[in-house]
Image (cartoon, rainbow, N blue to C red; front, side):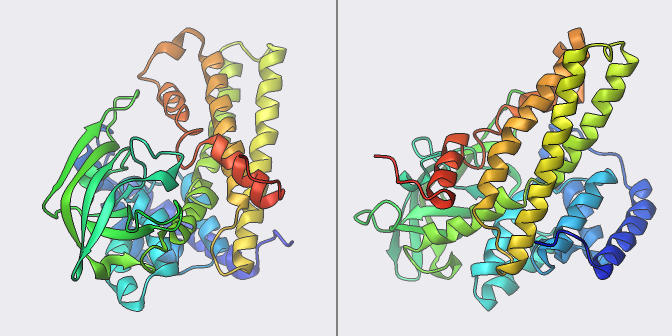
Length: 377
């Protein structure tokens, strides 16, 4: 498999670097990370700049390789992350682009690309997190609407979202994976209650969401009724296959900062620490190569990442935790200072072996779909 970039792709990289160098110094200061309305405004403002400059389409209209270059270069340049636009740009948008009708693509994709609308993810439930197929939120057909009742948890960006990618059970008598439907739910519909959840780091990017007979138009269904599990696998392939690309680049940057901090702080003489840093360097280089391989595979199969994303997500989750455990070793007593970005990232890294499918779920996927092992009983 050829992992090299073409001349056209390298030209795209050069243009993007030039644009980033000119635009990033003109950005306003970043808002308080705990102020989500301000963060939404900032993130959407950045998305509008990308749109006006012709770079907003990389998340689904461009090739997977061009998307990889975009994520790599924006992270290296220290550009704003997608932030509040995470679900729309990296989950819901690519899913609608792949599975939606022409009318649905025309309705929902341009506002996401312009930064006009923000999406949240309504997948997990209190008793259906990693075991997503056991979800119980029900949708009953009533004419041209579904009437939805139930609850969701860990709903990313619910308090500032306009739309929700929502999984519901439309056939309670069907087998667990066969009675699920994927809906686009307007967050201003009557019957929706959002209660923010505070993380260890003090932020509130997650929420509980309670749904009391919320009416969602049938035209907001992506895919066929009861075919939502297949559509969800498309969403999760993007979530696990390409959504963390920028974070791998960020981790490699942090690794270099850790090495320099160890040298300044007199820790460079610690052989154990140097070996940890060297092993992590090799780990993230391998993860970057795996990312390129996954993108090349997606390029050859129509743009949707394959099950190789589970291999990546499994190893990346643990490597990120190891990276910030090493950061604590470098910081020493300062590892207790929550004012340091590395310490906040360390707290955040604890969730990575749970978020987007637990490591146990990823191991099952690798075992069954890649290695061909029998399902557990």
